[in-house]
Amino acid sequence: MRTVASPETEIRRIAAVMEAAQTKGELGACLAHEVKRFGHYDLMVIGARVRQEVDILPLPYREAFRPYAEKWFFGRYHDLLKCDRMGAWTRMRDPITDRETFVNYCRMIPDACLRNEPEAPYPGDNAAMVPFYLLFYYLLSAFAMYVCDEPGHPEGTPFPGGFTVHQKNGQYYCAIRDKEEEIWHSICNFCPALQDPDNL
Image (cartoon, rainbow, N blue to C red; front, side, top):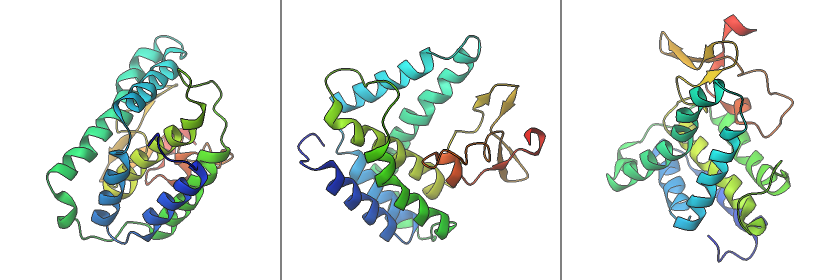
């Protein structure tokens, strides 16, 4: 990924390829191809950033949230690569669920990656790579939400107030699903989970 000359051109290309996918398998293959372009150094930087973001959370919430943050990124990363190694994409012929929301998600990605200034710098001298580090997050979230039909935050993710992402009668519920509408690039706006009725 570090050899890419123009983040804007490349990220717009990737988003367009994603949007063109018709089945879960086509999307999964696209996501795996793009994720595999991130090198070991990139993954170390992203991992360090995830740890930074968790470390600023207050105790005891920080320690409750930490394993879900790791699952959110690296659990999904490994699941995506495992599906790729097993040749799962050819068996996933179902159309992408909620096509309209998926298309809107793909069209949001370039602006989110290119215009979204992180609140804190990434570790090391990596300013030119920040759009791609943000892209990594959106690629893994697309895998969860549109290939696996899972919520953006993994099931079990805790939120302040004792709420968690949970499943009931085959439907996922999240305490913050409808709470981040003002943050236009938030994955919550594109998540298949429903707003938890206990936290309206």
